[in-house]
Image 1: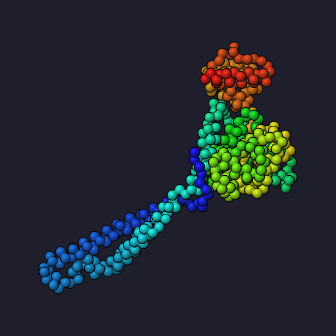
Image 2: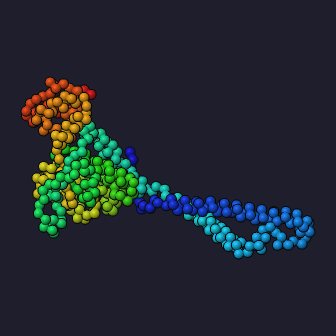
Image 3: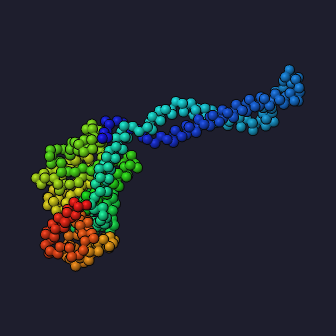
Amino acid sequence: MTHLSPPQASIHPHGSLKVRTIAIAAWLWKVIWWLWSTVIVGGFIVSVIVSYATTGTSGFKNPDPRSWFIVRPLLAYPWQTAVGLFFALTLTLGTYLAHRSQQRELPEITNQLAPLPSQLNRQRLLAKVRAFWINGVLEQSLYGIALIALGLHEQPDAVANPWRLVFQRPNRSARPLAPGTRITQVYDDASGELLILGEPGSGKTTLLLELARDLLNRAQQNYTHPIPVVFNLSSWAIKRQNLGNWLVEELNIRYQVPRALGQSLVDTEQLLLLFDGLDEVNTLYRTACIEAINAYRQEHGLVSIVVCSRSFDYLALETRILLQSAVIVQPLTLEQIEDYLLSAGEKLVGVRNTFYEDKVLQELATTPLMLSIITLTYAGIPVENFSMTDSLATRRQQILDTYVRRISLD
């Protein structure tokens, strides 16, 4: 099991440019050192050879510097040679200083670039959230066989918007969002303050986890992005404590985050909170849970929060959650269901033929959960084996019983 380390100060990881600059300058110093050595030693050797060839051994007894090979350019082109030497010496001095800087600074920079415990803690927590909620829940979800773009309606009156009284805006009814609008776009438009409502099996938790997946990708690419963490609110009712304390406890229990580190993450507002299961909180304490979230929002108003709940259970309460925007997941339309059944091909011919004439089946299939269960239950089964009772509750129970028997045989 991977455990996270206690919190430590973080250092900005982008220092590779400085390392490359120092390394290039140090390489230039080696090249220039080689060139100077070649010019000086080679010039001396050439001067000796030329002097001997022109004056013989007398040139060594009475040397004339003007005859030296290395001095001739200074006498023939004084200004040009002086400028060239100035730039050569400047470049030499600069590369030498960079070489000394490499010896002094490179070990320190290399240490800074190494992953620090705080950075490793961040990556480990991101990995834990992804492993459980994305790999373990979202990708294994029953809904995976019925991926349909869910319709969303904006519901302004479902949240306690603090600006409503200031502008005295009248209550507004639900407004449909454009078809194909992704939940991540809705989250961005709401500035990270969103309530997701829907009926049982409507796909609201799937939407929350799809949002979590996109936010995890952002956090993986940008180390300044807050860490998305999914929490289930049902456990809050056990102690009914301050939300910040509950977050620290849940981080420790669910993700094995040490309490000191969890407290630091909460206090420094490094978390992006994704709350599922508000409707799973005991009915007696559901209002208190919303009040606890609102109290936390008053103290940490810039922390992004997304809350997910069943529509009926939430809207039955008088207290509203303090968020900027709310959306309600809409039932699947007959067109969406028909398109899905057609896309499944021959294995759902029996379901498709029955669906067009069976009003009860049409009503049951309006949520992704029931549509998935129906298609898994009756895939490849002849039409004559379908139950045709007109009772919605009876038909639902028959489908669930058949589904359980069928998967138990698989």
